[in-house]
Length: 117
Image (cartoon, rainbow, N blue to C red):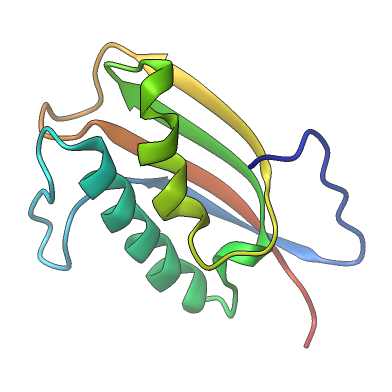
């Protein structure tokens, strides 16, 4: 599930650096497994977004970089990223040859709208 256009009004934006599948100690999670890495990235996004008072429902734009991309990977990647959300962001997926370290198959960069509460 994605959206082609997302409009934000009267909000501040949080720009999160690309999130990869590492644990709290910086160790890779799920080498060789796109689904496991997507699940860890979702957890990392939850942690980072919570630090600014947001959730994955507040994401308005995402860019997903995927090593060894094939269309069959879409459910493995997006099921964990969308789990528990009600809003779909504008989304771009880019197949890439490699990321910064060979253990990582996915990197997700997002922009979240921080609504006044």
